[in-house]
Image 1 (cartoon, rainbow, N blue to C red):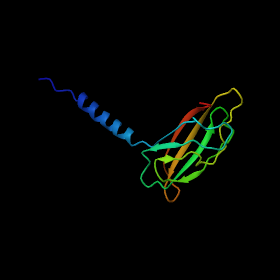
Image 2 (cartoon, rainbow, N blue to C red):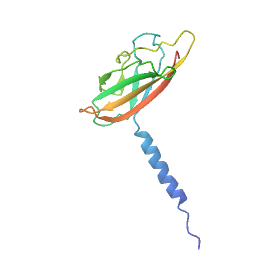
Image 3 (tube, rainbow, N blue to C red):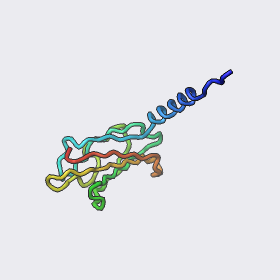
Image 4 (tube, rainbow, N blue to C red):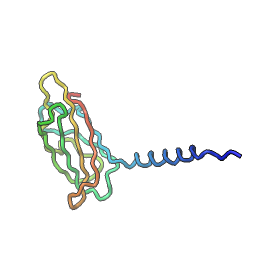
Length: 128
């Protein structure tokens, strides 16, 4: 008598674990739409699955086309899943005329002691 295959059961359990884990992954989204070039107005950020115990969020931006240029960032108090436009202090995107640069925002979720609980990033081209 043939033994039943365990593959469908194992595959179903693995899929459940992957989907469950994906739903709990700290993420950030943003758009450059409406953000002026060479300014200091940060975009609005939308966060999901912020880790429990998060008290502050540390933001930092990097130009992937000019990695040596430091755009900076700042730390804000965590008050919810949206960080309003203009809340982050930094040097805004300012690629030379006619060029498009890719910028990456990295966000760290920090606890009361400043320990990093999780980190995430998002990248977008400017100008949009």
